[in-house]
Amino acid sequence: DLMGLFDLKDKTESEEELDRLLESLSVDIGAEKIDYKELTIEQIDEIPSDELVKAVCVWMDGKMDDGEEYGISRTDTLKGLPEPCGYVYSIKLLIDEFEKNGFNKFYENPKNAEYIDFVIEGFRALGEYDLMEICEQSKEKYQKLLKKHGEDYFAGFLIDYGNNALTELDFDFETIIEKKDLNRLLINYIRGNSDDFGD
Image 1 (cartoon, helix red, strand yellow):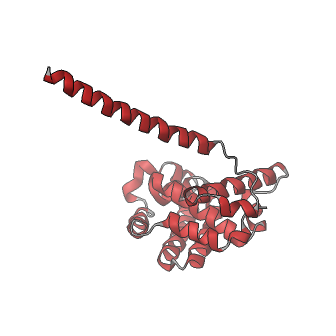
Image 2: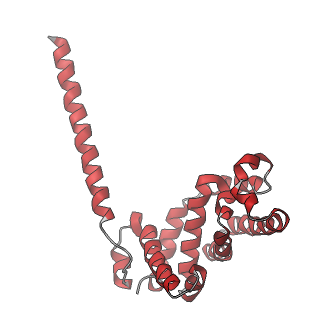
Image 3: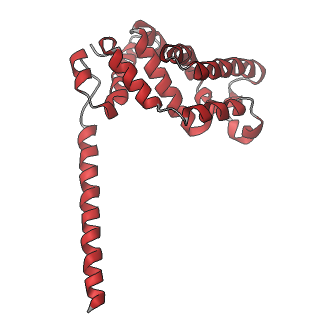
């Protein structure tokens, strides 16, 4: 029965697929178990590149959480860490928020506005002057819009997205970052300044 053979073939392929899926899941689950809240300078060199940016950001989150317990703002804690820490953390924060809905999403949380100076200096340190300029423009526009409309303007951005003054900057920024591997830039930057990360 030919149909039976095809069924059998499909079955083994789907079983292989399932095995591959389970394997990939177990790798992910295993990776999640590593807690990077404690991170020594020596460990930085051991962390695989694809986890490096996340690892240092988790470590910095831990530092900022500790600071908050003593009433120190997250940005003040970052200012107390070596400069590369603030650059990497803030650029990663911007990229994560930007991917959700552009600069509007980044500025929706007024606390994020405190990170934009780190982002600007970070792109300068990375030699990414085109991205630095767009972020400077976003800061200027944000401050004007904030003065004119208040914080709620950014929380309600979806209603008026097309007319939002930050939208055109989104396209400029996205066009540039699509051509770059920002994660790779950050990995290389961390590796090049590894003494500044970890305890």
